[in-house]
Image (cartoon, rainbow, N blue to C red; front, side, top):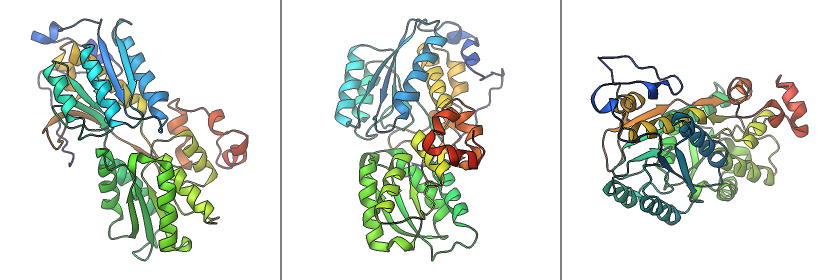
Amino acid sequence: MRRIAISVAASTMTLSLAGCGVLGATGSGADASPSKGDDLTVGLLLPEKANTRYDRFDYPIIRDKVAALTGKKGKVEYANANASASQQASQLQQMIEEKVDIILLDAVDSHSVAAEVQKAKDAGIPVIAYDRLAEGPIDAYVSFDNELVGEVQGRTLLEALGSGTDTSDKIVMVNGSPTDPNAKQFKEGALSELNGKVTIAESYDTTDWKPELADTEMTKAISEIGKSNIAGVYAANDGMAGGVIKALKAAGVTSLPPITGQDAELDAVQRIVAGEQYMSVYKAYPDEAEAAAQMAVAKVQGKDIQFDALTQDKVDSPTTKSIPAKLIQPIALTKSNIRSTVVADGIYTVGDICTAKYKAACAAIGLK
C-alpha cells in the first residue's frame, strides 16, 4: 500500500484553506445548494485509549471544530473501541442505525472493518478514514504522511548514531500492530533509511501497540544480542519506547542507546528532556483533527469544491484506488525544538513538561 500523491489544480478559482475559511467559500451548481444545513451529526469512532492523544486531543478538537463550522448546531457522536475490533464494529453499526450524517473512522483493524464500511455505504452514510486507512468503500482519508513518519524516525536515529555508523552497528526494531496499516508504512519508511547502513538484529511487530509487549520483546532482544551490543532502538511510538526503556533499565543499562518514538506524548517529551529517549515524531493533531472536521462538514453539506480543495492527495488501499486524501507533514521532535513545536502549538505548557523531577534537565536545555 504505497502512497500516491497527486496535485490537483483548480483552474477556475483560487481557494483559501486557512482556518475554516474554505468552508465559507461558495461555488455554482450543487455547491451553492448544500444537501444538508448546519444541523448535522458526525459519528466519530476512535480506536483505543492506551495512546492518550485520542481522548485528550482528537475528539475535543473535532467536536469543537464541527460546532464552530455549523454555528454550534452540528454535533459529534463519539465512541472509543478500546482496541477491540468487534466493539468498534458494533459501534459503527449503532451509528448506522442512528442515521448519523457521516462517519469519521479510525480503525482498530483496517481489514476486518471493511464489511461495516460497506454497510454504511449501503445506508448512504459517507465514511472518512481518519488517521488510519481502512479498507472498504472509503470516501476520503486524512492522516499524516506515514511513510515519511518512518523515514523521519529512521533518519533521526542514524543522525543520533553519528557519522561513523556502519553495518556493524546493531539495531532493534519494535514496530506497531500488524492490524494497523500505518504501522506497515512506518516500518517501510524507517527501513528505507536504515537498510544498508546498520544491521537490523531483531524486529518485532507488536500486537495492539502494547507497551508491556514492547518491554517483553526488548527483554528478548537483549538476551539474544547482548545489552552492550545494541546501538539503537527503533520504537514505532512513544508508549512502546517507554516499554523499551523499562526493559533496558531492568537489564542494568545505565547509558541508554538512542531510542525513537512517535506521538509526542507528555511522558515521552519528558524522557527526551531527560535524555532517556532521543526523539519522538510530533504530528500536529490540531491540523489533522480540524481538517477531518472540515472535510466531514463539507461532504455532508454537498460543498464539493471545498471538499476537493481539502483533499488534494490520492491514496490507494487494498480495496479502493485513488481515495481523495489530505496528508499532513510530521516533524522530528528532539530537545532542540520542544519549545517551537508542542509548546508553541499549545499542546503542553513548559509547566506541564518541567515538573519538579525535570526542572534541572529543562534548565540545562533552556526550557524554563
